[in-house]
Length: 123
Length: 108
Image (cartoon, rainbow over all chains, first blue to last red; front, side):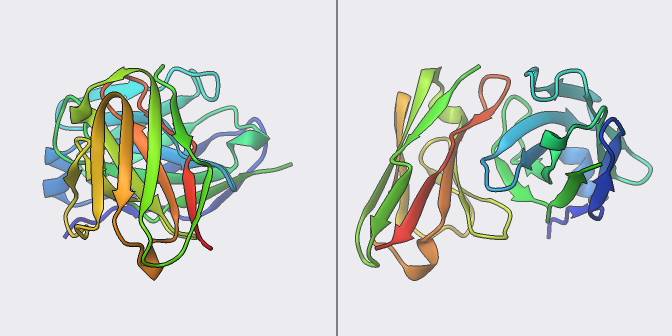
């Protein structure tokens, strides 16, 4: 049974940073890639980036929405994947989803989604 | 970046009817790296179809995916009440991975 347990909702000031965590089992952590996807209120899905913890590889979406503001990391000791978003703006207000890939290193469909973490950016 | 355009934006149908959702890519996408997701209000999306035509685990066979190159289709053969939701297409073969803007299937 796959589990992706995300950290709780956050309220942040513009210009600050947020780190969202996603804890999973050791087996899942060691055998799959993880992507972060966000969804602004009433809007569609936006892929932010991906990490393959066992290979130490990351890949980010290089777009104007969050270019150079995103970091995705993984902690083997706690089998947790993290998303950090810096220099927060009001349009970063969204639900952030941790997702598990289906097993391909090259490109993987997102076959399991965490419960989502609401991040609100407001002064 | 591969831009995915879904049509129609909203599909109004009755239970039992057939739904056909389209997704067009701005450039050719490998069918091996194409997926469809379903999202209901207040829930996380759920993977329906991957590899353009393979149903994910537990997905009923009334859901079918097809297509190649730049044109992909999701078909729901007979709509059940639980199928009224928003559907997104996605390509994951070319970075950045991208999603379509969604098609809402609503009860007529």
